[in-house]
Image 1: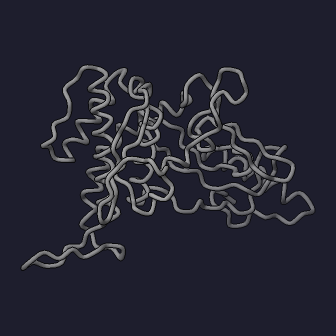
Image 2: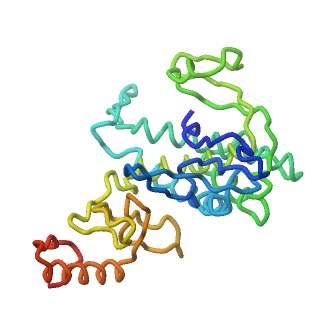
Image 3: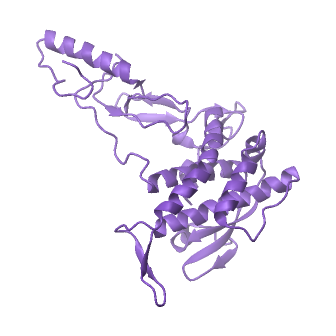
Length: 296
């Protein structure tokens, strides 16, 4: 399953009563360490709950973004692409269908509606109706799950059986006794999922939607010739930072892939000017010609 990439170390691994964040190396509050051989280690934050505070806040933010992204996915599904599959209907033209978007929209509705049902049962709310449009159900589920105090209740859910659609290629990785129904092109399987799984699914759906819609940067832009400003790092490993995923988050300009140090645009420009002056005054040839953000 896609969420398996988030799995972290065993709970209470250090005997302190704290457990590592379930997002593992993807944890927003991970500690970054550079070894002598240049290897970068990211250790998830330790805390009393499976998700650290920063990742719990991220779940709440990105949950609220899903209805809007569902709408953008629906608008994109009919656009012709090389990956589109023409679906032909009797006495009609071929309809280009983005099968990746169709699968993601179904997964989004399936996941959010199932967590809506779990919260409705826990908090004595009305259950989602069976005869509903997926677009309406997604918006309703997010409205219920994101109400004050509900995200905490969602993340605290105990394990219970939840049905999920699975790719047939994923079946060999499941336990032999996993219950479910195998269809011609997909399988329906029953999994024991808890509140941590809910948070990880929400983050995964948000990331997949951004990736499908082209809202993620495929390859970080390298800022060639500019070393890290930290004296204990000083590596030529600066990259353009990702755009903020939510209003109010810092808009970082650069990030060092070695030590994780980040600079905003003003700090980056100031650092490149100071480094350029040092390079010009030293006997070593300057390496900042035609760099982005440098004013000569």
